[in-house]
Amino acid sequence: MRRKRAVQVLALCGLFGLALSGQVAKPVHPDETAEYTYEKRFSCEQALLFLKNVRGALSSFVTLTEEAKRKLPASKVKAVGNTEWDVQTLGFANWANAIEGALRRQDLELKRLRAQLAEEKLKSGCATAREVEDAQREYHAAQRAFQEFWDRFAIAD
Image (cartoon, rainbow, N blue to C red; front, top):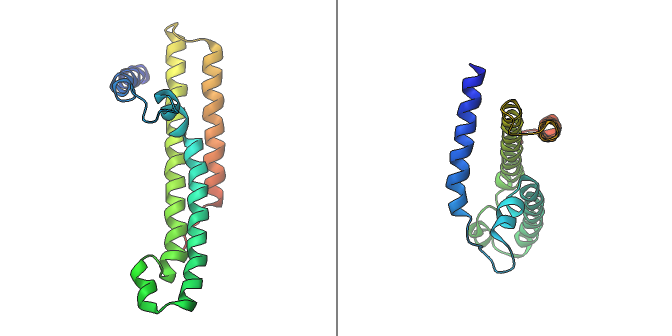
C-alpha cells in the first residue's frame, strides 16, 4: 500500500514538473530569470516576508483611518472602504493570519512529500542518503515553523 502511494506521488510529481516547466519558460521581467521568479520570488519564505510588509501596510492604514476620522466627514471615510472597526481590528488580523497559516501548511505538506519522494528515490537508487537527510531536515524545519505559528495563532473575535 505504501509502495503504491509512493509511486502515485512520483507520478504526480513528474506530471506536475512537466506541466510547470512549460509555464515558467519565459521571464516575466528583464532583470529576473524565470527560475529566480519561480524558485525565490514565489517561495514560502519570500511570501512570508511580503506578508509582513502587508501587515505593516494594514497597520499604517489603521493609523491613517484614525487620522482621517478626525478630519473628514464620516461618509467620506466610510466610502473609502475597510475603515470600520471590525474590519480593521478583527478582519485585518484574521485575514493575514489565515494567509500565513495557508502558506506554512502548504510549505509543510510540500516538504513532507519531498521527504517521502526522496526516500522512495533512495530505494530505487535515484537519490543519495544525503539528499534524503536534506529533505528530512527541511521537513522537520517546516514542522517546527508550523508548530511555532500554531502555538501563537489566535482568531480575533
